[in-house]
Amino acid sequence: MTRIDIADGLTEQQVFSDLITAQGADWVTALRQRAHAAVDRMAWAGMPELEPQLSALKRGIAELKATAAASARKERELSRELETVYASRSWWITSPLRRLRQILLDWRKA
Image (cartoon, rainbow, N blue to C red; front, side, top):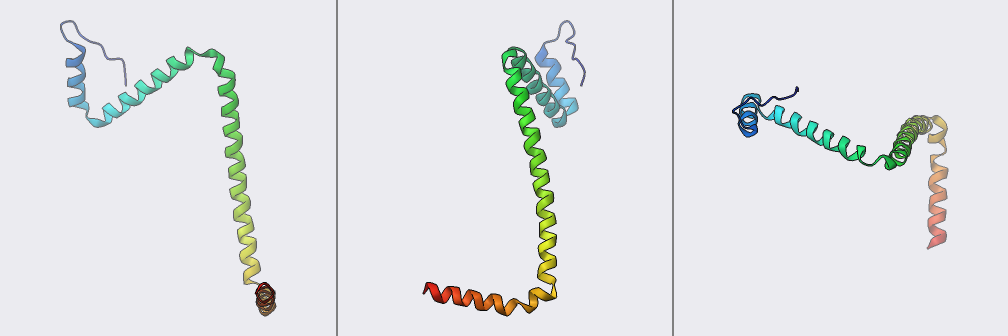
């Protein structure tokens, strides 16, 4: 999107109406996004004292994302290990013992 020049004798409304008609909804969406970004830049430029806090928050977010990614990798790894245990022969052989243990625990609670 480039700068829009308003020719002499035309109003901004006429020029933008013609552009909206010619370019369609995608152009309007892009224009809105750029307007929001421009307003954000102007707002932050007016508050330089908040920049250190904003930078710290951005670093914190990046660290949390990295931690979440590492946790997701670890969860996948542990899930694969657990699947291996469940598929193992020893898991099936000891199944009756685990059931007996649960029965005894339930009996003690009753």
